[in-house]
Length: 386
Image (cartoon, rainbow, N blue to C red):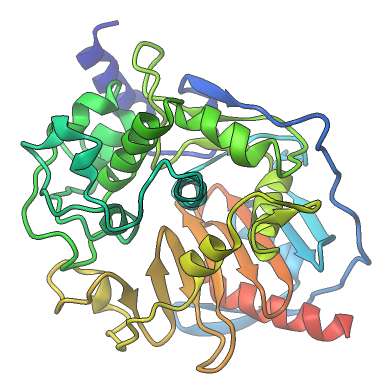
């Protein structure tokens, strides 16, 4: 099929992303290592009901399982102190069913950047990316660095929405994402404003391909997925079989248990089975509270029209840094952090409470903010375990 017709077909027939998109897009394998597989140990099951949920600023109590079911949750797994203490599946989903992640995939990209820095493929976060990608000199600023991409402050124009002429659609449904990068446009100096922008992920993917000589799925398989003991091989959706470029902003396909295992790897500061897989310093640096800590208004800080916020976004309740979101436990306590995606997808890590919570679903559900519930569950689980 002609590439333009293929793109329009995807926009019209597939339209909005869903958790089964791994069945639509072609993909490349992300292999596990059979010699490293280690099943997640099962801990003492916990009764976590009742829970308090806020929706449209009104609080109500529910039984946890009942709320998960009515909220469109398809899988919900909690690890505490490296053991499974809660695991439920709904709507026909099972422990071995593959689910497609949306922006959750971006935190996996962050991990891979940390590995590439440690191995010397990337010099440092402040290196201009044009040093490695000179073919983009006509569309991106010579000042654009890896750090700008990780902090969503590239200064590139980005149009949201899933209409065929939007950047969201062109990136999600595009059949040649390398060519799509040649159409991006710089509209402001890098590092000035936060603006969520999926071109940043494509640029990181192109950069990783260039410096490692490997596809992103292959590099991720060799350096993270295999070594971390994933129970099953995964895959990464690609734009097309002819182009073979990973959908960097989304499309990592795996089981809920293995997504939880990735969260556990971060909770253990990049270490699994006596092997340092992700540099400990990178785990700490990429998820910790930003040094720049002025309190921005928590509603307005998402807008590109805000007052300059340096290279990080920060608010009294949370922050964004290096493709991870953060949740403050208090001014003097270690912060929780999480990968977050469309339809209420989360990998939530609480170092303070030694807990990982993973949620996937077919919709967000009637809840104002899932991390508030995750934080409360983490606190309760840790108290009950003492």
